[in-house]
Length: 286
Length: 270
Image (cartoon, rainbow over all chains, first blue to last red; front, side, top):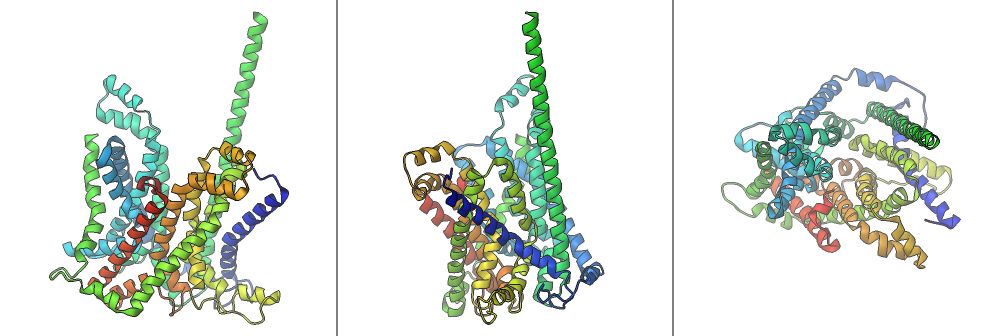
């Protein structure tokens, strides 16, 4: 598409700078976790140490908040998957005004600042007499995560052939059977992806959780308060652990993807060879 | 299908609640007044912060757009699809790391005795270290870094669906590079650009932790004031009035983008 070498060079350079911009901060942050200074930095380099990891390990508050985070995230996944999927199926079957109205309502939380969702959740439940706490954080996070789930499932539903559904109904399946045997299996990949995204969106969330958490800590809130008050390299240690986990996950994913690709290619070439043989034998016998 | 409606209505209730409530609590419940809203416009400091938040967020959005557009085009059309998947994975890595920790990384880099100053002094570009974290620089750098991906992904998606033949046709007909982009690629990528802009603007205007970490007392963010009303002032009504204004501002921005680029809500929320 870009023929002249100068153009190619510029775009290559741009991509390299872009990636450097993304990764250098992470490297510096990770490096600071290993530096033996009170204030996290890589410069000046004082000496290699592992003591920030030890500090982190003995931090009680970190463990409770990590546990809370996982609990909330699991609850969010459990609530938002069925509701989001149901909403997607419903919207897919509607038409006209009703559809666009419902769609707008569903999508609105994505386009709303988290702080507004957090505050309104807090105020609403406070009015009914439900105090703030992790359950409110869960509900607040659900309100926008459901929208993500819905969008993902909806995207997959759009390529669904309604003929399948009709065929099953004609053959005497009940609505429930159609749902369980035909529609849901088709949606499983999207639902799986949605579950992963819902989980990590929940873990990442700060704004909503900050207002609805009551006296509980989640990992993000804990990190936030740590960073604002006394800055110590223990946070860098935590960051480095997260980065390493992410990179490992990415490498694992990439390796398995490549293997699947290679396998698929191998299979198809084997099939081609077989077909060729069959064809030749056909020719010979003829 | 009827079975499905039940949980759906639950959810419908659910997502409506936040909006209704903010509406309701706009003024103090008992004696509906606009007093809380007037406070903002009378308080010049708060109003200044409000305006500055809008301007800075718009600037962040623009910066993200300029940075991401070439990258999105590169990923969608230039690089081989097989490598694109790997590059994508690389792109995603920083974004699995927590938002707070990412802005913390910039806090370390930009601090007075941090690596950036050391490097710049080292190569002799500047004589004395610069205080990066005064003024809005820090916040803007942090926000751009944090929300870059929300611009990149939608633009990438929309460019990818463009038929490469159209670009080649434009080039064969002698269109220079910039015009190909302006007349062929950009119009096609419009929904993606709109959705990226909306996301980045909304996220930066609503961000709490990035400005509070990378900002200085002179550059407070509107969300920080809201937070102050809630946790330090204990004046929830005042806080909700401010939050509601933030909501109006963001909705206004969504409307503006839809009007400006002539796209529908369904296109934006992809």
